[in-house]
Image (tube, rainbow, N blue to C red; front, side, top):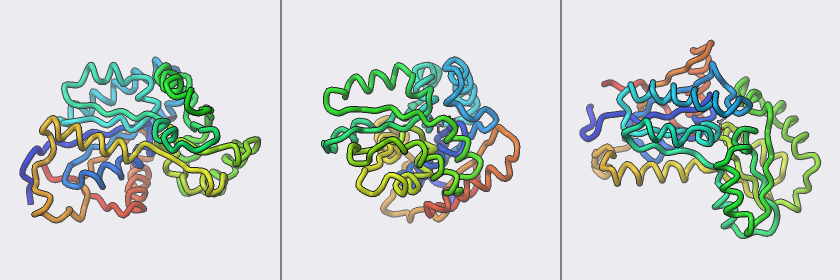
Length: 276
Ligand code: DGL
């Protein structure tokens, strides 16, 4: 059955599988839309590269996705957003949504204690992040926590809890849980290991990511631009299969593709290639 309404897909990209955590929320919020997901695994990780290199890679991926006829783009990567969102917006004639560490909701919790922001070194160094911290630092103590090497562990095997927990135990070894009110996941890869983070830091600390906020924002932006698929959601049942086309730039594409689909299945999402 062909959907009426706007048939063009929504582009989503990340340096690897991290953006799948965002894609899952986008599919839940917009189940009638088609998606094109690009994992730039050939150049992963982005977070330890120079800003200029990440900007150039992000623009190349954007150009590729724009060539696929997308109607909107979600930069499902905090690092690419910090390095290149202005340039990406300048080159796109359609709406572009970026990611930013969810410091605002963490501050608005109003709890006493530090807010830790886990992110890549490049995100934490960026001007965008430092402006965000500056904006909220009178309301809470915000502590950047660079997580060098964590993206690589997750990319190798997102379900290897042992390796992830060993990394996290070391990372938080000098931190006292009583002093912390919240941890912000400022990298979309870390959302895939939320359970392990909770296991290591304990359940008294709120762990916040920006993924559902990003999905809500995309919905509003598409609605305002009259770009939402116009299927009448009340009359049509939610499609059983999500419509996603995957592109993977690196080696072992079949394994990567299987990994992406497996991560979506964990969220109860099954997908198929859309029929154009
Ligand atoms: N998922 C990317 C982010 O949100 C990971 C960056 C990387 O490849 O280092 O920042």
